[in-house]
Length: 77
Image (cartoon, rainbow, N blue to C red; front, top):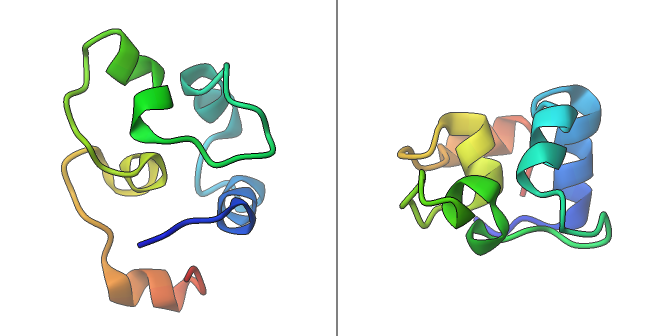
């Protein structure tokens, strides 16, 4: 799944992703771009070895993959 800034902002606005927790994990990333796994604080401090997408990690947990039917149901594509 490819996420864009509109997807991220919609999830943050809806409360599906906790905005404060997101900002803590990606404090160095400007609001004008979607962060990558390498931008994540957990990845930088060595507590996460997953190479998933940060939005999927926040929505589904770091080890799971996004369920395509759920994403379509949520109008995220």
